[in-house]
Image (tube, rainbow, N blue to C red):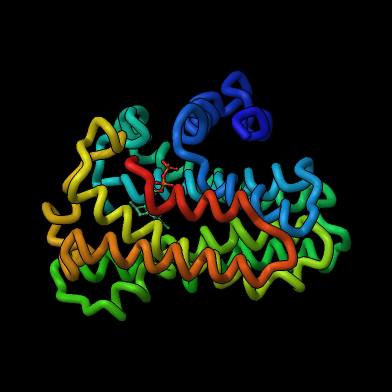
Length: 281
Ligand code: GRG
């Protein structure tokens, strides 16, 4: 994955050098790469060629990287540390950080349309639509808007879940579905994979809230304790850490149960659900 991303990102020796350098800084050498791993694991279920999946996975990871760059900016979460290093607007400047996000988003769609990634053009068109919807105002960007509007407000569990299904869950779901669409007959597996993806997308966020409250900055590679400092509603503020962890375990059990409906074992997807709830960073 690192090699694929490094290859798609323009060289920092090509003009505009500073923008390209900042794009590479934002994407390379950090991050758990959970979304690409999910795309590869879902692709296994539909017998997808990894040579195809790697490009779909790169597209999703670039959208994710763009979202982190913009989220860290002063107008949003205003953070100075990401993936263990200074955030893009701190290392470069705000205008560059804005452009990095813009350019990474465009590059994601360039990658998704640069060669055959599915058995037929209609399926690939569906993949482009899936990623566009997952990133847009009815997906991640919409979730972020709700998040920004909810600071200091007492959301209930349903409202919190709605926000996170969009902000975090939509792109995780897209990673799973895009990987699956690189293979044969993805629609046969889509229902079960969709349910799996929704469960782990939410579990990912529940665990993120617990880690923000409990893990040290050095382990996370980003500033810990920000949710409480910013008076943000989270699963920990609503349920307490112990019940939030129980919820993550319930969501994992639901995710595993969804995989049981598939015609193939899907071991890697199972392991990734485990990683999502057991991770410490
Ligand atoms: C700016 C349009 C726009 C959206 C931002 C994803 C997001 C929306 C903001 C990130 C803020 C945040 C902490 C969200 C919680 C879950 C999450 C996406 C955490 C970061 O993802 P990881 O842990 O990061 O997969 P790495 O660095 O490992 O890739």
